[in-house]
Length: 158
Length: 158
DNA sequence: TTTTTAGTTCGAGAAAAAAAGAACTAAAAA
DNA sequence: TTTTTAGTTCTTTTTTTCTCGAACTAAAAA
Image (cartoon, each protein chain N blue to C red):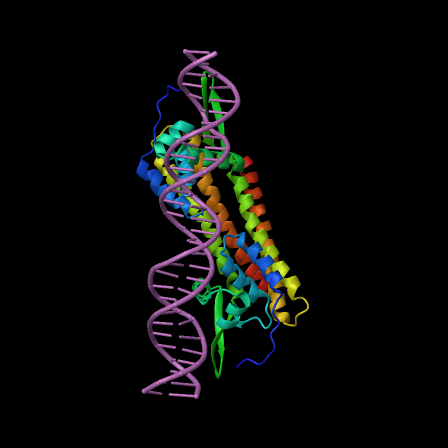
C-alpha cells in the first residue's frame, strides 16, 4: 500500500499536452497515459490510478500499457506487500525510438532504390539519376541520424 | 495530344511498391499515384491516364492530386493544343519533406519542454533533469538533421 | 449557342482504427 | 475453500479514414 501523497497534474494540462502528442500519430489514450506519467509525482502510477484519473476503460489502459511495455517505452516496479504494478516511463530508452525513427528513412530509401531498379531498362537517364541520388540521400540521412544519436550519447557520458 | 509512346510499369510492381509506401502512413491511392509517377516513362501522366491505369474513382485521383500539389510533392505542365495537365513528381522538393520530418523532433522536444515547465514546482529533481535533457536532445537532433540536409545539398552542388 | 472536356465537390458507404464494456482468469488474501 | 484483486481477453460500439459515384462547373471546342 502506497502512503506517500501523489501530485497529479491538472487534467486540462494532460489534455492539452496529450493533443500535442497526438500530432505524431499517437492514439489519444496512449498519448494521455504517456503525458500523465511524464507529469505525475512521484513518477509512477498503478493501472487503477491511471484508469481512474483518465476515466477510460480498463481495456484501453491494458492495451496501451502493454503496447508501451512491448515498445520498451514503459516499465514497472512493485512494492512489497502490494500486489499492484507501478508503471513508469523508461525515458532513457526514448533513444531507441529515435533509432526506430531512422527506419522511416530506410523505408523510403529502399522504395527509391526499388524504383530505380525498375527503371534501369528505360531510357530517361535524368529521372533514373535523380532516383539513384534520392535513394542515396535517404540512406545518408538515416545513417547521419544514427551518428547524431551516438554522438549525443557519447557527449553525455563525459 | 500526346503522341510519344508511354512505358507503363507493370501493375504488380505498382501494387508491391505502393504497399511498401503505405508503411509510412500514406493512403493506398496516394501511394499508388506516387509510385506510378515514379515509374512511368516519360515521367508524367494526365489525370485520365492515372485514373484509368489505377482503376480508381475520379474523386480519389482528384483528392490526392490536389493533396500532393498542396504539399508540393507534385506539379504539372501542359502542352500547347492540349487542355490536359500532365502531372509529375517534384522529386527535388522531397528535401522539403525531410525538413518537415525534422519537425517531428521539434514537436516532441516542445512536448518535453512543456512537461518540464509543468514540473518545475515539484520536487523530483531527477525526473525534472531527465526531462530537461530529453528536450535538449530532441532539439539537438532536429537541428542536426537540418544540418545534414544542408550538408548534402552543398556537397551535391559541387 | 450547345456540347464536350477536364476536372471538382458533395454526400454516402465501406473499411479500418480506437475505445468501451462485460465476462473471464490466475494469483493472492481471507 | 471462498473471495478479492489486478489485470486480460473477447465482442460490440463508436469514430475516423478512405473511396466511390453522381451531380456539378468553368473553360474550350464545335
